[in-house]
Image (cartoon, rainbow, N blue to C red):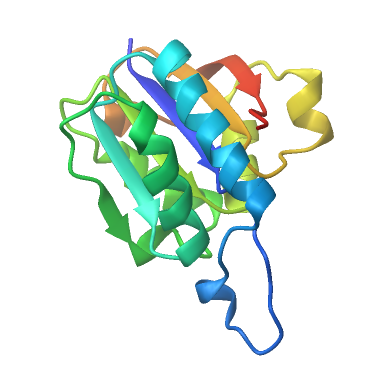
Length: 162
C-alpha cells in the first residue's frame, strides 16, 4: 500500500526585514532537522519521491534530514507547495506515479489540513497541534490519483526533536 509522509519544516527564525520565503532555520531547527532525518532513516523505509517547498526553511530542513536518509533521489523543489492549501498539496501527492512512498516537506496550515482530511482516524496528538518538524505517516490502498478525503489511515504522528 502506498504511503504519504507529510513533514512540516523545522523551527525557523524570522529576522526583521526578511521576507517569509527566505526565513532560515534556528539552531534548534537544525537539531530538529537532524532528528527528523534519523527518524526517516529508522522508520520510514525507502522513500521513492521527495517534494519540498522552495522556501529557505524547508530546503534547509531537507538538506539536513537527507544526510541521514539512504536515497539516490533527486528532490523536487517547487513553489507549488509554498503557501499551498490542502487541495493543492493533494494534487501534488496524486502525481506520485509508481512511487510507493512519497515525502512532502512544507508548511502549515496546508499540511495539517491535508493530514486531517485524508485520515479516517486521527491520533490525539495530531488533533492538538502539528508543530514544526512534525511528520504524519499515512497509508492508503489504490493508486495515487485515487487518494482522497477519508481514504487513508494515519499510521503514525511524530515530532522528532534534537
